[in-house]
Length: 77
Image (cartoon, rainbow, N blue to C red; front, side, top):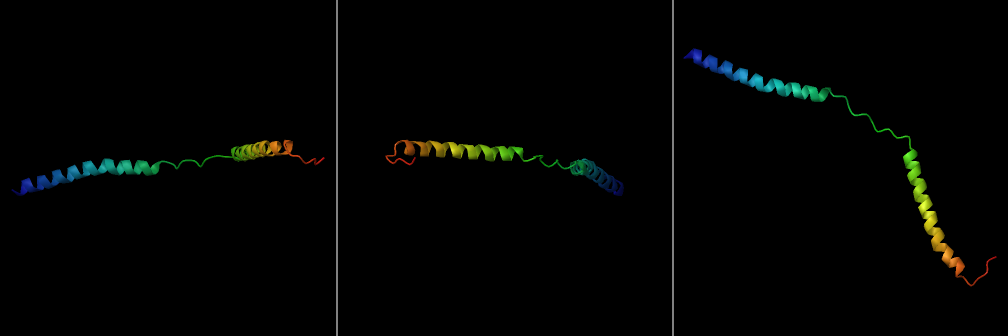
């Protein structure tokens, strides 16, 4: 009877180790990966975006102010 109990404990321990080993290797492999590199940006795309916004503002202001100047009854120059 004691032989069956020890064989059952050995089988349970073997099953537990068989399940736990791949999980521990997978966790170790996941932690072993190097972190992703930081994004590289030299600022040119940000500068270009700011330039486009400023040009759009200038264009809108030009077309808003120009009709007011053309229809104005006052002679400034």
